[in-house]
Amino acid sequence: MSDDTNTKDSPAKKSDDMMSGIGGIFDVPGGSKKKKKKKKAADTPPPAAESTEEDAAVEEDAAAKDTSVEEKPARDDSNVDEQPKPEAAQPAKKKKKKAAAAVEGVFSTSASDDDDIDLSSPYLDDEDLGDIAPPKNPMIKVLVGVVIVLLVGIVGLVHHFTGFGDNFVLLLQGNYQEEMLRRARQAEEEHLAAQLAAMPKFGTLTFAGGPVGATIKLNGQIQYGQVGGEEGPWRALELGPTTAIQNLSVRDDHHIEVSAPGHQPTSIKLTEGMWQDSGNGDYRYHYTATLSPADAKYGQEFAQRMEMDAENDFYGTATINTIPSGARLLINRNIALDKDGNELRTPVTFDTYYIRDEESGELKEYQVRVDTPPDRGDRLELTFPDNDELPNFLTSINRRSWTCNWKDEAETKRLPEDASIQLHCDYTWTLEKDFNAINTYIAEREAEFERIQAQQKAAQAGAGAEAEAAPAEGEQG
Image (cartoon, rainbow, N blue to C red):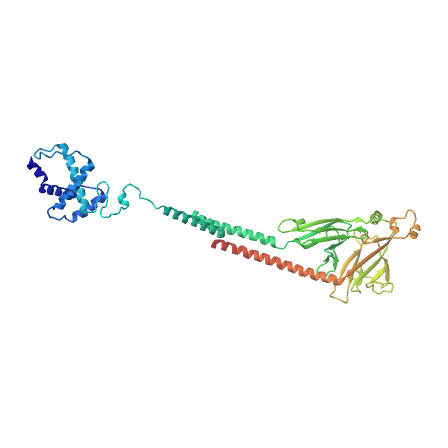
């Protein structure tokens, strides 16, 4: 019994057990990481020296720890000659493996089968923790949050001032180029619309109403038009169904006044919103000016005057004043003469005039008629044969343009009781014409016409240049 005990506790036996544990280093398989480490260990053969007392002590400590961890009942090794039971073989093997693991931990940096712990360093790393998540530094989350907030703020500011955020999203979506082209086309259309809105607008003013032949003033000035081409005479625009004033600025306000002898004048202020666009920038405004008689008596006389009176003839006195003076009178294309055969020149007042017969050379007398045909009167033209710089002026002496001056009571009493109301009137016809003002009007009109043409050409050229440049800019964007 003592021999068996001594044998069991002998150094030789312990040495055999220790060597057996060392052998476990090479015989026991492990994980993939462990195999790699064991392979390195196998490449370096263990020292061949015999086990020392220190090695034996390490083995005993490891065996003791394994036994305490497993909490296995102590084996009865008193009878060493007794054949070990099959059930006891497996625990002995485990004990050997644990002892070998302990020795392996001493000689190598390999981890055990269960924990893969690297004992070469006194500190733990992520591999030493196994499935346990390593602790995280809370400051990392704070820093990440701060960075995100800063990035969002920077992107917001950049988007606010430059719109970069939207462009960046479009770029990520693959729609950047298409959107840039769309924006370029939209900008071009808006620019052209703004140019068209800023371009000067011109319209045509047409008239209707009565009485026909009433005088028209635009912004306080009589309007004129040329008759019969560039060499023809100028005449004042009068109220009629075909009267029109062209090239009026739509954006400006215009004051229009229509007047006639014996009638109350009428006026209107034409503003931009009153024009009608008939398409393609063709603006028009139609003004119907119907003048009312100054009173009922004059209304009755005017109505009677406009009717045909086959029984009576009515005549009047014409007065013509011009600036400068010296204008020649042509009535119905014939030079008007006095009774001595001299030309009538302004200023002049006359109720009769003379025309020289071309064949006989005799003077023929004519009275100035009031009751001319309703649709036309006597054609009157004023010319300056000695001054080519002054234009010729054309008008007509018609029944609508006469003024009724009522006779006094004494004259009225001498009239028959059934006398026409026209017989109660002394008719006068007056013309005041400043040819220097007509010349100024013509010069201003020509300058305005040239300015309008130049402005329209410049605007059209600018719009064309913008239209050509806009697609190129869109493609570059």
